[in-house]
Image: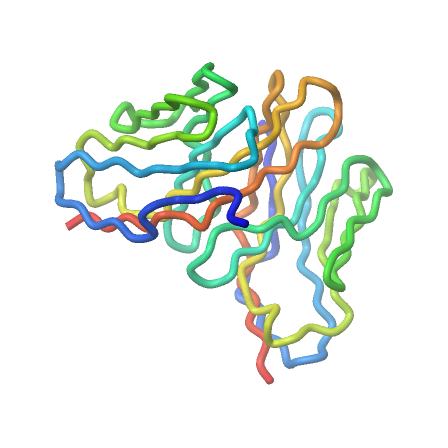
Length: 116
Length: 114
C-alpha cells in the first residue's frame, strides 16, 4: 500500500562522514523532490528530478547531491554533514503531467538525520 | 518571489471548538493553493486543495476557499477533535515546466485538548 517509501526513518551519522538517504516510489511518477525540514520550520526544497533532468535550487549548498538511477529510486547524498544539516529530509513525488491541471505532491514519512 | 504567510502558532483549543488558521499569499499569476497536515513524527499529507478563484477545498470536515480578492486561503473546521492535533502548512504551487514547486508557510501547530 505504501506509495513513497523512505529508509531508514532515523539515520545517525558523524560530522564529516558521507551519508546517503534513499527514497522509492510505487506511483511511477515522473517527478521526485527532496525537501529539508528543520525543527519547527517549513519544508525547504533542495532539488528535484523531472525524469532524468536534475533541477537544483539556487540556494542549495554544494554539499548536497542527488542521484536518480531509475524512475522508482532517488537518493540524497550529503558529502560532508555538518551539525547544521541535522533535520528531517522529506521525499515527495508528483505525476509531472505536461498538460494543465494541478499537481499533487505525495510525501514519504521522512528520514530524521542526526549528526554527531 | 512567491510567498505564503500563515498565522503564528501555537493554537490550543478544546475539543469541539471552531478552528480558523489564516493564510495569505503573494504570487504572480494564479497558483494552486494547498493545505498540508503533518502529524507528530510523520511526513506531510495533503489535506485539501483549490485550483482557482472561489474554489472550495474540503476534506475530513476541514474547508478552505480560494479568495483572489484578498489573496487568502484560510483553513476552517467547525468542531475540532483531539486527533486533529498536528502542524498545518499552507502552500502554493509554482509551476515550472512540467513540475510543480511548492512554497510553504511556516506552519501552525494545533493542539486540541479533551
